[in-house]
Image (cartoon, rainbow, N blue to C red; front, side, top):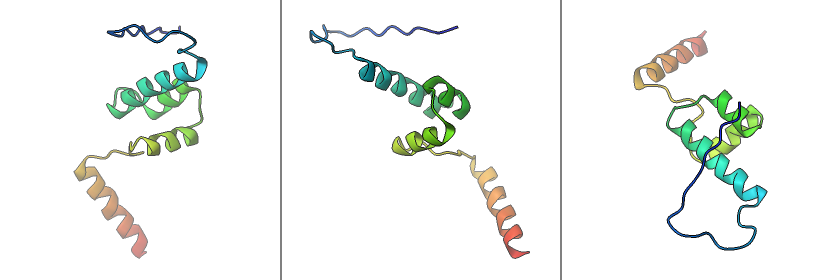
Length: 89
């Protein structure tokens, strides 16, 4: 079921077609990107909400300086050690 978000502004928006399709899509993108940055949604859910591929999401994440993987330091160390062991074989 679609969810609707209502935004309130402290001042009146300019007259005219301010909220065109592109502007609304950018607003939706900003909300989804922030939810992703905060870890409140997964990458898969973000791609689904934005109706884009995972590859396009990765490009968008790079544009917004969001890492594709965010490992805790101890997990990152374990991953590096594993890769180094595999590389020596």
